[in-house]
Length: 347
Image (cartoon, rainbow, N blue to C red; front, top):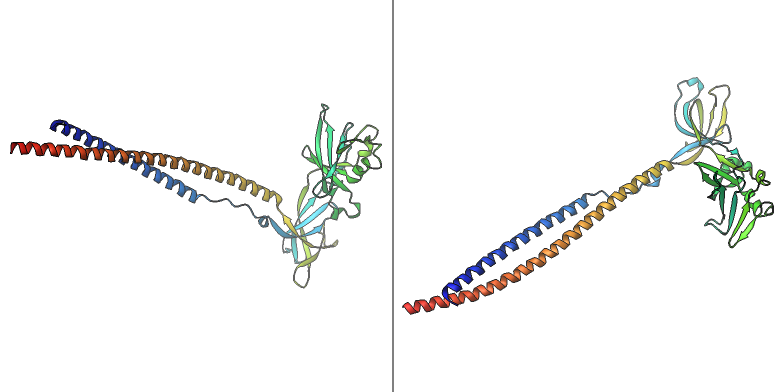
């Protein structure tokens, strides 16, 4: 290779080496940018507030309760303060009175209704019933009957006392309907012939006909609870040795001449509606949190893959640069040899 050719080759290699080094600098800048973006995502994840589920203990409180004037009334003391009229007693007591709709008898089991009894039992050991009721178009709408803690009047056992009639319930059209347990037992027991009970594998089915419809009038529906807030004036409270209220004397009509005595019971009052709403808020926040974490993880994986690609490209550039440098060293030796020979000739 001649002097001029070697010199041209060396200049070309020098230009290539500079270009490779420039590409390497660009790759490093891109990797630095990706590192900054990854750090930003990590800081974003650290700044996220992890949602915490609501505690059930935050949604119940202790309250004094006492029975109302009727068996379907429940009273809870909200607050008490010094009576504005000292002649009437020591306290003015604010009370929340809940009136339960005891239910209305109605032959809800229309002709054509069927009730099925499974051979299996639920987790509590109770029979499993399902009811199918024909709608206005003749289509059968199926409902599950569940063991209720209330009787056919919608009254709890402790309130119903001797009149308590165990029942199963189902939801229909926003209302709760009750069917007496005794009626269901009769359908599949001593009165099975009367209800035309048929049997298939694992299931018995009773059929409601016009003849036996009147026997199903122990089906009830319960309306919404009504709530009243009342302030009793001139209430006298009774306490035990610990200072806890055990009873009170009050007038339901706020008439000092007609006082009534009642026992007070401390009960845990659960705010189920508030707890359910808090759980809904928690589930929504948790969904947003999980989605944000997933987005950050996905973006981080993309950045890591891009960085790996850039790292591989940088290694390729490094290999190319070493090859160029080797060739440049070789050409430089040729140039040095040509220079030496030329100068020796002229010397």
